Length: 438
Image (tube, rainbow, N blue to C red; front, side, top):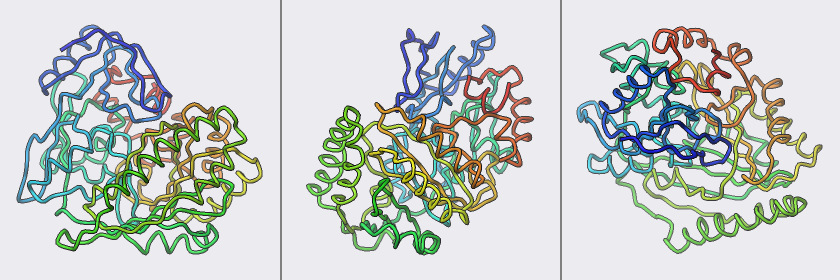
């Protein structure tokens, strides 16, 4: 179905476009017809999901395919515990789809608004030294190539291409189905605490390895860190979820409504940012609870922000964090959003930020009405030049193909596959031209 095009904006309000046409395919065949039509007219075509990327990776200037009607389970393999999902399925719907089978995704990030195709295509990840990003859970995909044909990639067909297409940036074709390797449903025991930043820094490497899923947040120019440690438990273990009222007060009233008001105030009066950050560091509550994995991994993020995240070798985390802290103190950045630190295991996805190296992630944020340019650029220069950083594909960065090629050993192999599957650049946009070349 085709509808008149309006202005499309991403969630972070960092990208917008007025496409020539917007289509809402409800079947794989409809996607094929749209791609063939675009080819006949010499137009570019891009699929978009939830628009939760902060980069321009999903911008579709010609034909925009909105996959919201392409959702749900397409197939199940009970013996191998695999589920094939239609590409537009949001991550937050997947737990309900898997529940009847007693299954769960093995790891998630802290936001679940993305579609499954968007999450794997941009390198979305969670945390855990023994766990890879979401694309490492992909064991098969079906994509529509530039000629409108279907290509299946899994362990039975085109298996050698899986490391490329499982994290393909939308440059190789339009994903219409994604097959995930899932696990038996499990619980997570969460422990969230305020700790002195120096205590966290003193054993940062050991902390990241000692528990299944570890991350911490640091409010710039404070001496406090909020640590989050999630330990996996069998589904049969006792559950002790957060009381509904406590969860609403902490995650909706304080973390959303009150925090949004404070960020808005700091936009008007920038010097308020630092005292607000210190207030946040002092008032964030400590809590401990056990619940289903998806209820612990993810949380509401309704305060709009902009984000940049860099992956660095895990061994560099301590020195990189020290250098970042020193730079922020020296420059006296007025920042109300905390810095987030996570880890992930090495993987074999050609364009993964964790390709062949255990990785630590440092993410910086600004409230969406604030200009992030100077702050983000300084952090980028630090992590890029001093610590061999790789930028998250779905978040803000300034790198181009010339710089990125040296950071990915399989970069040219990916480009060769792109030449084969999309020689006319049917799926290109300005972002992909910048990061992959013409």
